Length: 391
Image 1 (cartoon, rainbow, N blue to C red):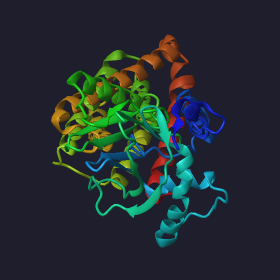
Image 2 (image 1 turned 30 degrees about the vertical axis):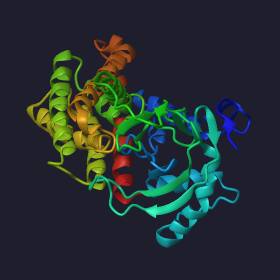
Image 3 (image 1 turned 180 degrees about the horizontal axis):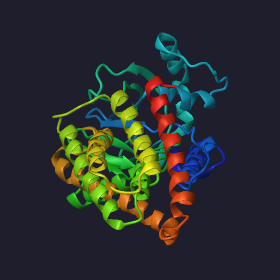
């Protein structure tokens, strides 16, 4: 029997906005402490991986009046998300066949946390684990596994929406109607998605694509891109003059724009297990160099360009073909890149507001630049090690 979505989302049994929001708040607090020069004790935060979405959704409205929903995610993420919600959670980190069996056992746990909604009425979800994907959508991406939910579309239903209480980052829905029309729709974390027409899907307008990917680019920096934030802060701290900051940011922008485009269009690809440790190492280098020099050197520009190439590959992991509308790839790519730049400028503006008042003081370098740079270096070094070892 269907449940009115209002009661489903607001009742005492609704699991929205609990653990995930606390976790996000904790990460943001650590980010703030690290940026403001916290001691190395604050450094061991969860390594950042450049996947904007830990899940993605395929939704099909079939000609026979049924629907099929496939939720895909990295197996580690799915296991660590669902395990604490089960009646008898296991603390053992499983691999191989034992992990597959455990994920199959945990699939029903997802039912309480997802909302399948037609015309404002929630239907019962019956998740079934379908195992690993046969081939990754992106050759450089991590392996993914899937959970499937099927059912009959209520007679006369006109609109579909969805919500997932354990999905706290933005993620895409790739929807297909009975006529074969496909659209990409982004959901803002644990909130309810927008309404999709069951009978005939309408592709988003160009302006909708611009707004969506501009926002995704900005939020990938603020507040979700802690490693990019620390890199930009490292750039900011090199000198008290505006010229070196502008030169580095411009160089970084040109470089990551190049590799972002090359990667998105399939010309260049490196696995994330290679890119992510190098990005972390770039953060460490920039921070350490700040301790030993206060002037922009030619090699610094060359290195920032090289680091920008790496960060561009990290950004590209966000914009795999799944999440970028094929008919609006250029528009989406440019909008995302502009959003990233706005996020970086916001980081620099924030630093100016926080410490810019003291840049002409004799003690600025000793009390501000060196302690913050050392804290950033510790975070970057920690991420480098954990991304290499997978710890």
